Image 1 (cartoon, rainbow, N blue to C red):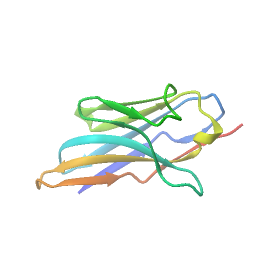
Image 2 (image 1 turned 60 degrees about the vertical axis):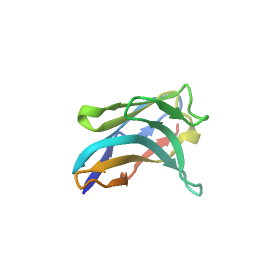
Image 3 (image 1 turned 30 degrees about the vertical axis):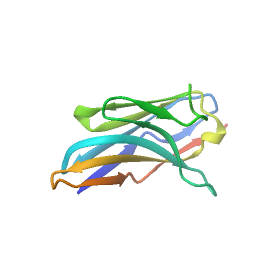
Image 4 (image 1 turned 90 degrees about the vertical axis):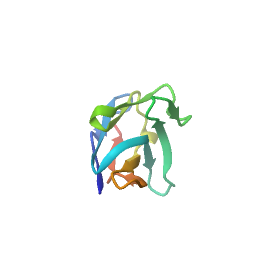
Length: 120
């Protein structure tokens, strides 16, 4: 079994910054892609940013230039640095990881979500 534990959400004023963290633990051999998704009230969950084990990144157009995804493979942790936050960034942010388990299976895991609210 694998757990993804997120932290770092909260309330921030427009133009402010936050850093989200997501640490994976459990029966992990390796982690392929890791990513952050978000879901605002009444909207579908959408990809915010993703990063491969080799460090290649992909961003949603709405966050390019403002958000940066990074990972520490030794710690099985992925980060999302969010700058110049806007009210439209308000959502629950979810961590996602593609994990190779000690059983030999590949499985996709989700974190529990962390609330980010951008408001004055």
